Length: 217
Image (tube, rainbow, N blue to C red; front, side, top):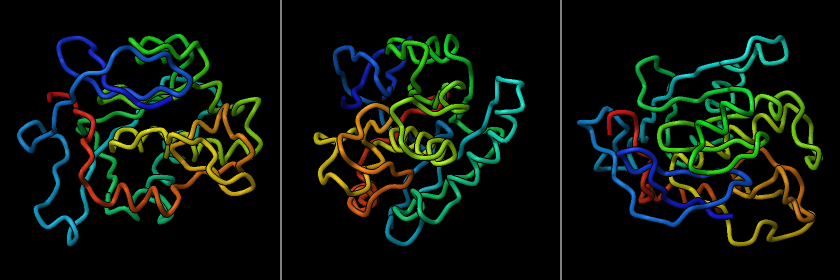
């Protein structure tokens, strides 16, 4: 399903939940420098768009101990969204947060979208990742657990950057799936893939998509 705009509380929140039910759409607000959210340089081809995020691990088991390291390593990887002119920077005062939590807490963070205790989402300034999926991936995922973790980070952060699910989940069976496809449940003949494809990078690199509103927006 596509990412849509929904109302959550007093602000408009850009939400994109894997496997979630979608309420009616609305218009998104645009982030500005005065809110502390990332801004786009006027010469967007010369300078990267800096997106600052913080990390919260709300679990305490050994299987999730490396959560912060995996997130930062994935978002720093040159195969990721940096190819599209974004620089993702960890910052404890950032307007965005990437959270790992158990299913019920993720469900609450993702409201009004349904994640059914098993999916992850991006909802406004929050990327909420399901801890069970982090530990074990999804039964329909045919790649490695490590690749699943990279995929879900890049997928949900892709939503935060304004990217949406593709109309066709698997455009070419036997080829790597788009990172913005719902790979947890809908590989549809494509190969599991944790990194943005060239055409997704080209789309994001135009820098004309609305970023999610950060805290304080």
